[in-house]
Image 1 (cartoon, rainbow, N blue to C red):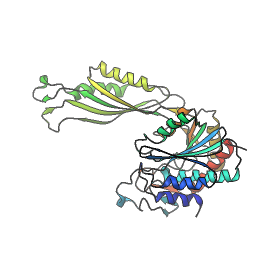
Image 2 (cartoon, rainbow, N blue to C red):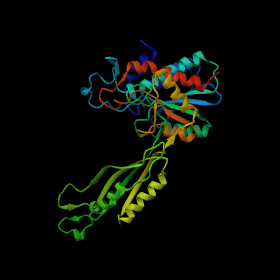
Image 3 (cartoon, helix red, strand yellow):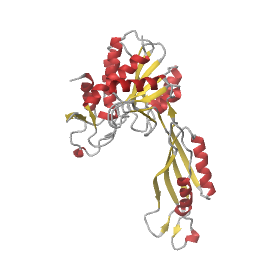
Amino acid sequence: MSAVIDLTRDLIRRRSVTPDDAGCLPLIAARLERLGFHIEHLRFGDVDNLWATHGTEEPVLAFLGHTDVVPPGPEERWRFPPFEPTEHDGMLYGRGTADMKGSVAAMVVALERFVTAHPQHSGTVGLLLTSDEEGVALHGVREVVEHFARSGQRIDACVVGEPSAKETLGDLIRVGRRGSLSGTLTVKGVQGHVAYPDKALNPIHRFAPALAALVAERWDDGNADFPPTSFQVSNIHAGTGANNVIPGELVALINFRFSTASTADGLRERTEAILRAHDVAFDLDWHLSGHPFLAPPGGRLRRITAEVCRELCGIDPEESTGGGTSDGRFIAPMGAEVIELGPVNATIHKVDECVSLADLERLPDLYEAICDRMLRQ
């Protein structure tokens, strides 16, 4: 069995449902420490994080991943047990195979190969892992970056192992991500009997025209790197459950996925202005999950990653900023160039999550080639 598949299988057997690491990080730390990596175990709250580095000079190239996984759901619906890695028809099944224990294993193997072949490499290569990516993400990379700011640790370039491919390894790399701004909107009304609407104020009726305006608003036109900003309502709740009671309030969950053509402050201001223009009495609690980021088109890491995909996968990769968010949103504000490269994302978070064994075998080659070209001797 190959080194990357062997390690992936070992990681899958560990039931590391977020934020429980289930021993994945100590396993990886022990392997890298034997090769001379400097190991830092960073625990914040109930979350374990690992920062392993080899070298002390600049530039600093980091590989970023997470060992936590989402819950498997009803395990009886899985074709194979979710925490017992199973190979079938060229695929490896198990929770986390694609998101992202396969990538983590490939990173480890690539780093082992690279420092063995080039013990005196230039710069610094690092591996940053967290067990808090799939959950609230408060004590994972977000807090590690705050720790780095205090300690003076820099990162110049970062490869995130999120599953990026559409159909086969190397067909897409993510060169940026949209920002995410969420809000909990409470529309205030006056509860009353439906037979006496003059004695009540229906928050549903008051919010409806404002909602139509929010949906119709064109927040921006996007740009060459990002699609236009989108606004979505993910939940609306109001009422007591009785059909003869006008509710006293409405609660709606809203979200913006926004490009670099807009700012979080601007979106907040415009949203609240629309609500006020429709005479809506409201409270709005905002949460900014992350700003948009983009690896510059001429960036060295972006160029090298595309070259590696072309040469080793025989594919001219699509360079995309689509998808949701990743922990790269915390690294980019450090001034780092961030890209994402990983396996096919078709089964992530699903029952019967799986990854191609052939793709998994090749992934360490891509990561090692990036190391070699970024940190030549």
